[in-house]
Length: 91
Image (cartoon, rainbow, N blue to C red; front, top):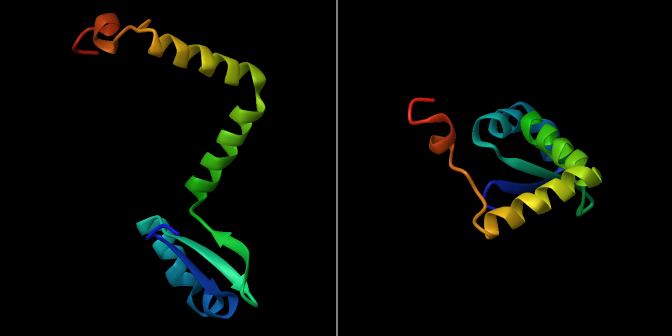
């Protein structure tokens, strides 16, 4: 478990919900909510949740995954152009 991840029982989460929400928003904490010792839910920021959804959409899209594989292959083979070379230093 990472340092910003905590498992707490649902009874404690219920009492501390406003504090947990603040910590998720401000400190990017994650809370795993357990019931009878088993994790049943997770509290994460809305930004993180949306990011996971976008990642799942990309992974589910074969064309995007193939494009990323080609891009990584190009990078490995040195077939890259730098931002400054295309747009100059002041872009």
